[in-house]
Image 1 (tube, one colour):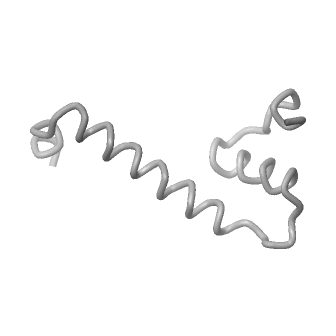
Image 2: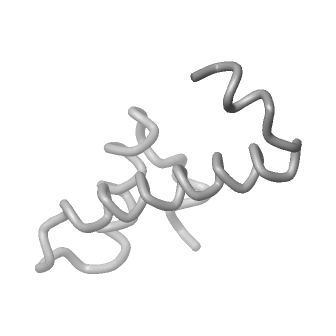
Image 3: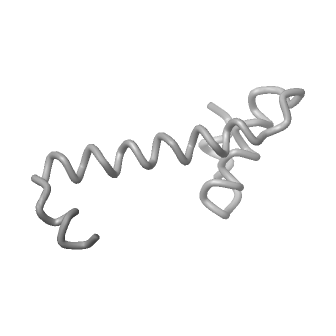
Length: 61
């Protein structure tokens, strides 16, 4: 598997990684309760995805 991935171009590997990130974000976002308001949804998403609290200076956006 490693050899197959390394045989790809740098661009192909980057795009593959970005695709995996997008998929994992969609899975986590879809698992959140639909009744949460957007600021709470963002905080819960961040906690689940990154495993730490959303920094307060970012949460205010």
